[in-house]
Image 1: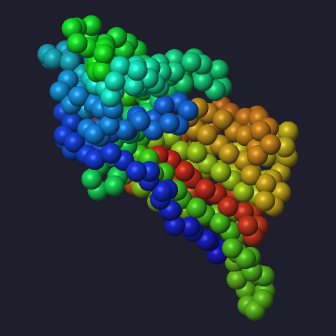
Image 2: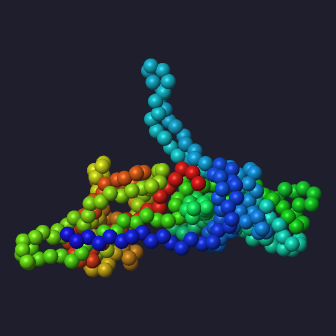
Image 3: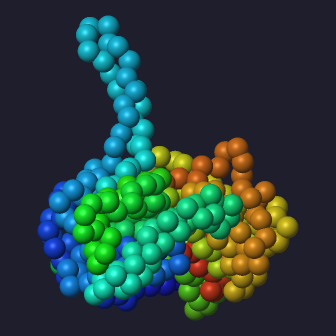
Length: 325
């Protein structure tokens, strides 16, 4: 069966401040991105605010809690490993040409961090910002942060007039760093052939593709799937473990996917939605469905679409995740 694949196109990378040496990670350019998308350079020493490298911490490997059981012959055996939320300590200096300029900068930078405490979309109690670490080779990683405490100033003589510094504590619900460039796998059904023209041949309308997906990160990722019709049911299998899930469109309020219609399946959090925001979770083959993750390295997977015709497609998208910046 003809399959069409698409190359990965990297998004345009915004300008970043010059790199400086940061404890735990070496030379990097740091940018804070507030919940509204505003970009605040953190390592431009010519700007009116910048990070004080001395005192930065929390950018290394994620913290873990190990659960263990005593071993009869001595020692213990690890039974479970649980990653914990991360805390980043972020010293920051703010200045201004005069008192009013400093005051304006102090208020603006403080608001950019504290606004993470406002309710977010989908009922989320916070609206995280992001710290983005860009390397000299052009690669970058991000981590979501929520302001916890520290925007107080030093309270010493001469501070608070044209300059002051604060030591922020930033809380990270997810302790892992995420690549800014998504990885994408695209499979599309090409033109079907007639079984008897010009000679007996086979063109399956079932199996869209078996492929190997590479996760370059250091921890598991939970991908998002976008299916383009026509299709009546979709099965995704992780071949190394046998884990799989099926979305039967005929068991949903939407019905079979027609040509050009799409459905998106998120594995974390579990969600299945049509392009018109219909809830399609009833179409998943519970309780057997396993919305599986992709571990680091290479994983063999299979995409199977029943009722596939020319134009049917599957797009798998994920952002690699890493232990460190």
